[in-house]
Length: 306
Image 1 (cartoon, rainbow, N blue to C red):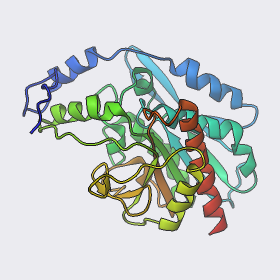
Image 2 (image 1 turned 180 degrees about the horizontal axis):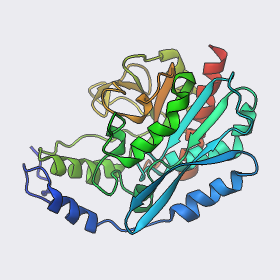
Image 3 (image 1 turned 90 degrees about the horizontal axis):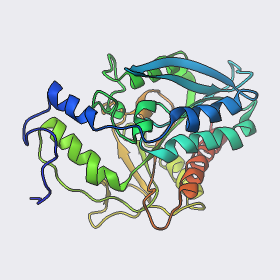
């Protein structure tokens, strides 16, 4: 049982309908600028990379171009690496970690791999520091055929021509204190189910694929990130966010059945990063560094073992 007050929208035990979604939407306010903080960085990269618009996200009165950064001199014989960030818009280092990797490290892989980087999959949610899109849909449960989320559908269309050639996919995320204070209570209210409190892990961890876990790959990424920030320990049950810890800092999910972004390709090497930006032991800069370090370690391992 929990003494937490009911979520302020909806009736406990009753899934939301259009009125509740509209009430939730009316509470969402722009808190930062996708144009100023993301698009300007991408524009700086145009002299070095190809920038492609792979969709337009329209939530009236707002509209957002969906942009990806692509290797200049793309070569069909090279393996492809996919980096995604901002699937959950509130997970800031996912976005800025992807941009940091593009700005500071992507040139290292010229002639070795084709890079495709989608740094901010959910710009509406980025501006509002939220997990969902404007329709109260979680894009990271929506990577499936006939997706209800425009963000997810657009990314799948972008990736489809290269899907079978992708060697590595790193999807950059965060686990934050607001997961427990706002987003999980909102999810329970939206779905008309009881909210069961959980525990937020203090540190970085990875989510591998139950169907193809690649433990050596995951541990190589963990080892690289450990040089930048601390790794989340298991809780008293030997778990992280309710899943068994299979190696230090690693849990596994059924990525594709759950409709998660990291499951959109058949890449043999795939992982979802989770940084904890609210830790007193980590700064925003460390979080961005950790995300970039994870991408670099993932590519390095895959190239060495392919």
